[in-house]
Length: 217
Ligand code: MG
Image (cartoon, rainbow, N blue to C red; front, side, top):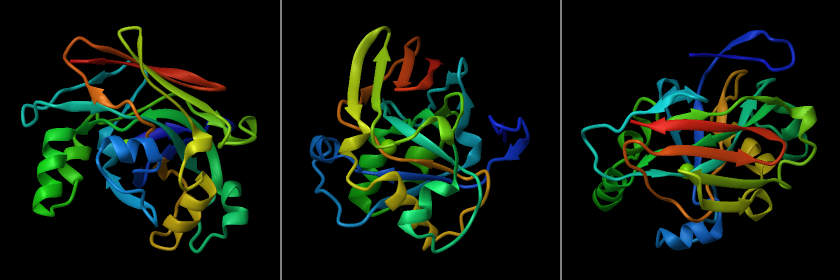
């Protein structure tokens, strides 16, 4: 999987796709989960990425796939043990993304104490919108996020409501994983998640970023 650096037009290999769970208090509440004291981190494979105007394919293994609209961050300069104060210097670009989730498989995994990799990692489960250079997004905590399904608003939130900021997430993740150019970070979803069905048109939007449109098939 490759992406294009929106500033230099250089092709980049996508590395790790880090994702954050329960990063908005009202979403944690709708899932019946407590507000976490440290970031809830999981990974998706890069094969889950699909770009705008693509399709989200419903897998046979699940009958309850949910949309989660999120701000996605593309890492430029890599590093480990990155200070929070310097973390945003490691961002190359932003995009709006969707963390598609097989909620039935995730609930079962939670019950059994198993990882979320299958529930979150199917092909096409990480739609990613067009990338915008980081210098065009002065404050990633000042953005409105929304998701429409067939033209109806299902999610509406604000990145100012994140429990852990983008800078805190980059700093935290870099203490575990060396961050490399081409890594992505999906920063969690606000409330209003819900199921999608074949034929649905999803339109994810975030202030200042081009929207992401995908069809569920
Ligand atoms: Mg999510």
